[in-house]
Length: 261
Image: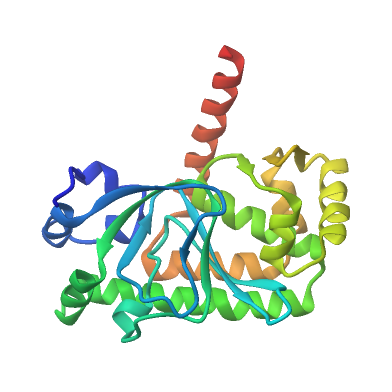
């Protein structure tokens, strides 16, 4: 069944927005809007992937689960890319679980159609390969970060990456969920979040984290955050000043909404 997706709906996704109009228009009749709930599992390890997803306001975490049940995040996918790169890389499944970290919307595309379009030597193919490079950079840097940097630095990195992809200052998630994402203990995350809150950088209450001072988070984060985001900027020509303005607009809207309520 064809969806009612319009060009404006694709704008929040950097990969779709980077396509030439002609190629983007070819995809629109097959894109279907979906909404992800907090904690929803999109893919399980070993599960056949029938659809790829282009997040617009959601953020999805790629998790690896050990035999003892402990988990660690390998990467995040948000409005900069696509969930399901195994589809066009020749695999039908992955060894990781794709779980929604931040609820929101995405655009769904059948896997067979993505494979067909990737087989053509068009701009979509080049953009998907560029995104794969950026994603591999993120996965590699996440592994190094989880081994070498403190829980507080990793928490700053994770919050900033979610903020970049959500463009909202409020994030709904528990400390236990964050601990599973960054490969730490809940008690360690509680202490780290307390330090950030005491410094006036965030406010945490009942599963809601509000980013109060983004510049402060950037001052406390390790180099991993900037390396990963700079690679996306380089490969896609993303303008940092545009992101900053988007965040300011989002912050103003949230303040106005709070004042009205």
